[in-house]
Length: 140
Image: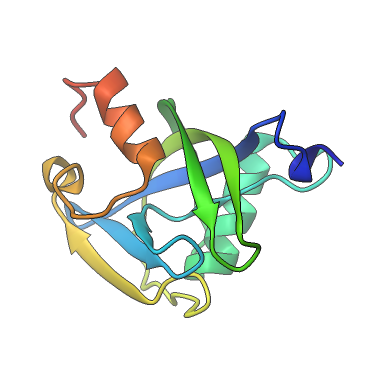
């Protein structure tokens, strides 16, 4: 299975969720790191559909018209499985106006920050660091 094969990176769809000019970051208990919500496609699911499903599952919000921003790569230690996984994270931007319902198994903590503050959050996932390194002048 490719998903568990260390020779292939996992593809992850993640979203910078914007509400009232601020962006959601969550502390993921599986990795022990701050990140923006997201997850991996299932089967032959297209990236945008995977993103829509993951946003519904993780934060209880229906998204529309996600805008692709770029990618980042990292290797993260998956605490429950006690193994390191290589990941290719595809980042999108979405705006919402409804209230979110955050799944506590996906986020032990969450906070809303300005976009430029995300890169300064302590202990953010490597894929976000790599994304900002690849896109140093990005603004939303």
